[in-house]
View 1 (tube, rainbow, N blue to C red):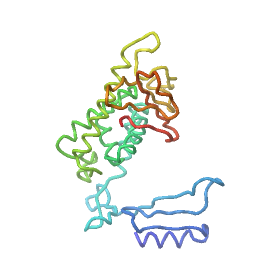
View 2 (cartoon, rainbow, N blue to C red):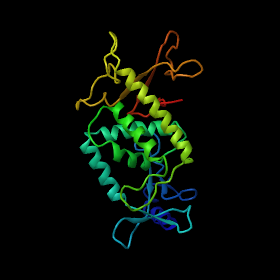
View 3 (cartoon, rainbow, N blue to C red):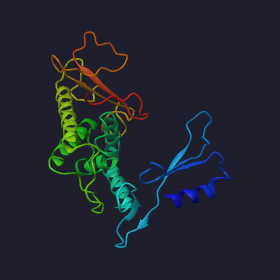
View 4 (cartoon, rainbow, N blue to C red):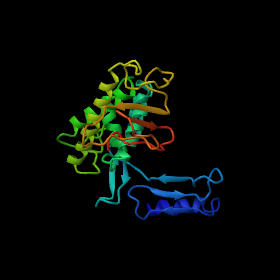
Length: 262
């Protein structure tokens, strides 16, 4: 990583005088800060640069990992990318939209799963177009079952088990709670009333594919949780007279996205 840092500085320092290249505290990649925002007033443009060495077997690569004794891990990012792109195509973007929501959920729950673990689990259970609520239900149901006894295998069959960010019992607890909430939301959405259509993505504009709400919004109505339990109420929305809570996620900007659970 130090050699990569030095090479980047040599090649780019003249063009970007405010360039900084960081390796301290970095596990796999060199962090490059260009010191030259693309648009004035916007955050600086950054890039992660990772070195890689082809594996002697011809399958996958060695990539840096400064936190282990060997300093290198096996990975197959090319196969991973092909698998994800294939899933996006076969599910008509349901896979990508669901993963985006799951990453929001993950970030608001102490990040129990790494990003690749979310995708690896989703690859196994989101295999066709479906409404987003049902895709989330499929994911949490599958994830709870898969993590009952062990971590997730690398779908490419190269890197071994995908490490968790929390003890597996804590990960299962968070997944199971989320599964209970999405089950409640879908059950509630199937109860038609004069005011509410019989589907969980109630009253939302549909996207062009006909699957799930418009890309900017995902909304579910949950029943009250009962005495002593707290429903999530969106910021700025009054709780007086409410009999249920609504979960809304502004997916395109990543701002103001609530958790599926408290």
